[in-house]
Amino acid sequence: MKTKPNQIKADPAEPEAVDPVVELKRAASRTSDWRARQQAASELAALKAPQSAAILRRLLADDPVHPVREAAYRGLVSLGEPAQAPVRKGSVPVKGLDKIVVRVRKSLADGHSFADFKEKLKKMRLDVYDVLEGDKGAEFDGWLEEQWKASFERK
Image 1 (cartoon, rainbow, N blue to C red):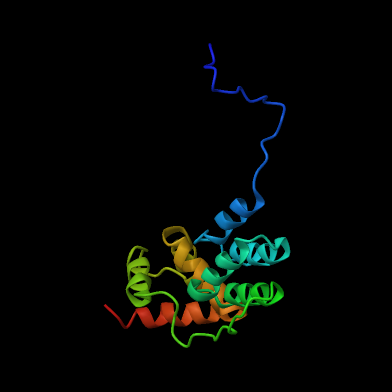
Image 2 (image 1 turned 135 degrees about the horizontal axis):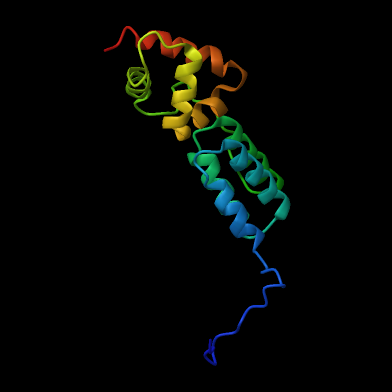
């Protein structure tokens, strides 16, 4: 195969240099992995790159998971950027959760268990499952079971 003069053939033995900020920006945007977003926020702060503050500001303002917003806040403070501490939102961070829960429950056979429901939710809507798990923390299972039980009263 001929190479054109302006194309340089990469040596497969040499690993390509990857910009860490680009990788962390991707990690900060993963909607179905709040732990990756939280880790990215911490690493962006430690990296102290010029783009770090903008990415952390976006996480602080828009991320639905409170621990991710907290990590972004701590990162901005460590960079010397002005930031307001995140406030835990009183409402559920997922719009239309009641309908999602009913839809998942109805997709299962009658007489299914909570464990079946939880697994099906995780398979059908990993993004929703992840946000709720991250936001509710240790109370997630109990809270989700309450939502599941309440869904039987909704049609």
